[in-house]
Image (cartoon, rainbow, N blue to C red; front, side, top):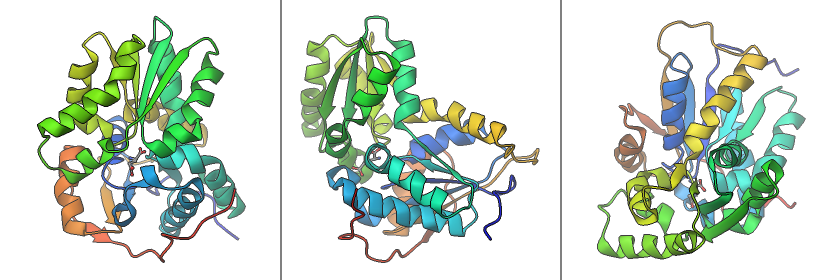
Length: 285
Ligand code: DGL
């Protein structure tokens, strides 16, 4: 019989790589007493080019790793996985009978963008998988059916962040091209619909103009996580600082090096976790 989630257990967080560390950063600031366990699936980065069936398979596999290690809540810190796999993952975790909730980044971010806009014109920059899923259209229009949403798929933008290499003129030209439809639509609010994008937030802000409010997944989700823990009576009883640790499926040293820039806090050790080859496995819809 599975045991109920424990308040002293860690919060599990995952992404395709280092991008979700921008979400973890916000969670560490908002919930300093909590413990966190982060999984970066860097061996299978980028998720933005994956099929929905692959994203469902990868998400289930990682959630199982987090549940085996006793996570009390799972945060999908990846917009691509959230867009294509959140529903399936929620059902998968519920089916295990562990009583753990799964929270994704798209809903909270969409609600925050709708609350922020004054003109009703919102832009979203995201991976091809996220844009193709239509998840932001559904979430934004559910919050306000009159909002005009302009979505742009940005195939290379997550790679620029994941590489950790200095930003080049070619990167700027690419970002300028991605931002052009948002400028033409005169959006006053832009959703960074990929957890890797805050790393190029300054570049995007400059290209979109200072009048555009950037909405990130991290800021939006922290309050949602706090709420989930509190209503389920899962807030840690600890009063001091919690701990955080990392697993990644690719090269642990490379992950630690780039990751520390995203997290803006010391990373400590990163352990490698080997997942059964799910690179070709798919969970049908
Ligand atoms: N960080 C991931 C997201 O939020 C995607 C980057 C990728 O793996 O393509 O969508």
